[in-house]
Image (cartoon, rainbow, N blue to C red; front, side, top):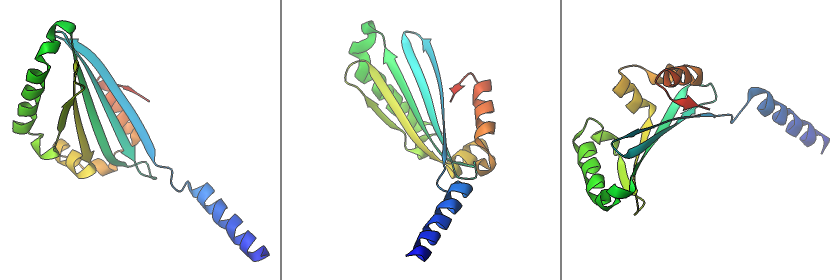
Length: 142
């Protein structure tokens, strides 16, 4: 029984000291308004235990003014067509709406897809590097 206790304590110390399971997440967002459409973009960036980029999720919410809400389905259809024919079509963007005034676009990105889009190896990028780059573009990151 004592040996089992020592083994458990030793394993616990190893996990504690190595930071096992400590993946990091960075949230970066930006908002703007153009032609009566309030747009909010939110990136959720995931990093592995060694602080190297692993994956990302992008969520774009476009809220229409009250006067434009009767055009929600038309606006959604235009976005579906835009993403279907754009360079992002291989990323399988999903376009939905809340049934009232907002169209939502979501895209899940792997490190391979980001590397391909950026023409660089994204797996070498740390959370600090991503944060600095995003903040230079006007995003707020936490």
